[in-house]
Amino acid sequence: MITVTDLLKIKGHDVYTVSPDTPTLQALKLMAEKNIGAVLVLDGKKMAGILSERDVVRQIAAQDNCNLTQPVEQYMTELLYVVSPTQTIDDCMEMMTKKHIRHLPVMENEKLMGMISIGDVVRQLIADHESTIDNLEKYITGTGYGR
Image (cartoon, rainbow, N blue to C red; front, side, top):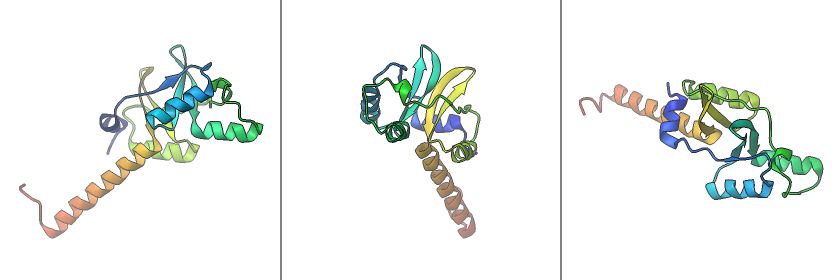
């Protein structure tokens, strides 16, 4: 079974962060530049929340106002769900589905190890299933042995 550690070896450990007082537009520009859907919000070294594209859209709709000079703390989600490197990607998919979230910080011994997205998890699940299918086809047809 593929673990979060395996996934981070493939996708990398980069995590982009902002502080709670960062203007929201600046955080959105960072997300656009890095082609990511969320940034972690750190207050010093402590995780204060997460800011996703969905958070911004929902707050704008709720407030009926689009003031992107406001700090990210006005838009971010404070409740964070995290995973450990030893958890499986199936565990991650289940959590993301049940909690309706798309990004999970990876923590080990209170240290931030990376962040995974629903896209990372789905890509890896598809690759894992394709590998299983390929191996089963080789087993059934008797090909691919001894190579």
